[in-house]
Image (cartoon, rainbow, N blue to C red; front, side):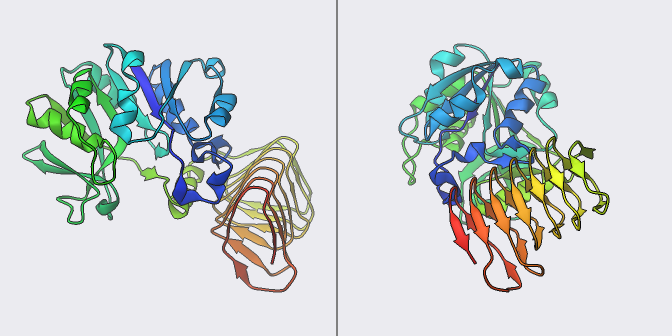
Length: 355
């Protein structure tokens, strides 16, 4: 079985971060977002993986290379223009050949991985296996209508959803899906919809089954979704402290501190918290739960909670000021000039903000 991971999109809803960085390289607790689905494919025994790229593809190719450092073989397939998931699959026809394959959207994060689902599909004669998850807001996703244990209809971003079961961004297919895609016409969004391709398979008598995932799932399309995915990942981190921690530092809960990082006097850290390599935190700083501080970051003063702080950022706050639920881009410089109570920010790479 081959794998496809789709990372061609521009991530417009995550601007300004994505003006200079593909959203799939946004780090979550020390790993680029797309590395989580890549690792799920590899853990399931899939070594041949096609990575569908488009926007700022050079940065993705430079970071992941040929896959050898992951024990896999990566081949990069360009999707230009980006005309939907079904279109992305169609440009991979030659790469997939006649093998069964799994499609994993690079901005989706699942807790449980795909090992069991891959085994089920391989041992079946199904033409498609799709994963579903219950969601409180199905209008944002493709939604399945289920009757008597079978999928009868799929609707993309419906105003009146037929159920609360959304399509997770993981799909198992055999070659018949390419025939389905040939019959598609662009939707009102101007895209070839994967829901329409699966619906074609259902309407033409092919075997389509579903499984409902048990663990959490997040689509990281918007800033709040990105932070929520981060919080879910931090919920399961294991404590590991490799940096230097001053004797007066107070650490509560599960905390990761990377090599070369220095935690100075007067710092309090309440986990779950991830701190990457070569960071300097303090003095007199509070790092609160569900914060991910990536590499080479400097933070002095104030309180940080529920934030994603990306590489090489510098943050200086006054004693009682708080930065909450924020995303701070690479090389950003945040400097407080006046006393205020709290800030909530989304700041792009190389920005300078005087508060």
